[in-house]
Amino acid sequence: MTAALTPGGHSRRALCMAALAAWAPCSPAQAPAAPARRLREMQIFEVRELGLAVWVENQPPWEARLIQDRGRPLFVAESPNRHHPPMAMTFSSWPEQRVAPGEMLAVATSAIRRASENFGLAPGQARGIAARAASHGVLSGAEGRFAGRVDGVLMDVVVFVGQAPGRFPVALSLYTIAGKMPHASEVLRRSWGRLSYL
Image (tube, rainbow, N blue to C red; front, top):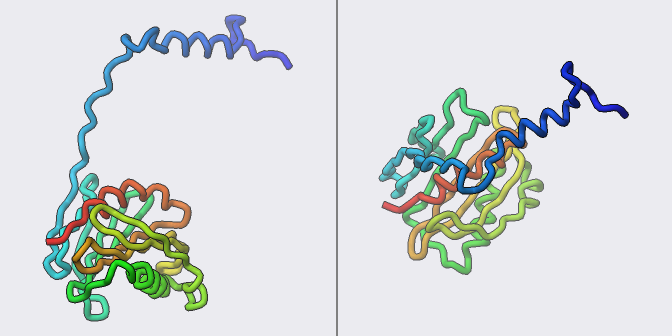
């Protein structure tokens, strides 16, 4: 195999290596300092109906609203129209309930499996979801991940059910188009990790 030559007679590889060498700093002392990273702003909603302070992305701003779902309040946050990948999160709570720490995994697993049916899973499929212990900020509980459908579109879904010590349980969900859940990890960390009780 012969090397491709540029019009000046030099191999393309040699030119690329020379260009890289010209751009590489000679020593760490010559490297420019990275600018301080500006923290992204968040919207904070005090949702009295849920007894929660919910943190939602603000760059770009997500749309958020409180709705009634089967007679219970449900806080919904959705990424803006041009956000890729599109995502939606829901937040619900049961302020009148308490779950003993030793019962949380069983309660969370049951709730996650019931929630999966809202995403089109049959009861037999829902029983196949393995919930695993998880924590987000002050909340400890269990999390389940599965593929479901929203308006006929295949989605990746994560549902978390947990509570802070001595507090009431909450259920959180996030869904996005299939294959894009890795893009949601920072959204989950920033939102679910900061959720707090009022």
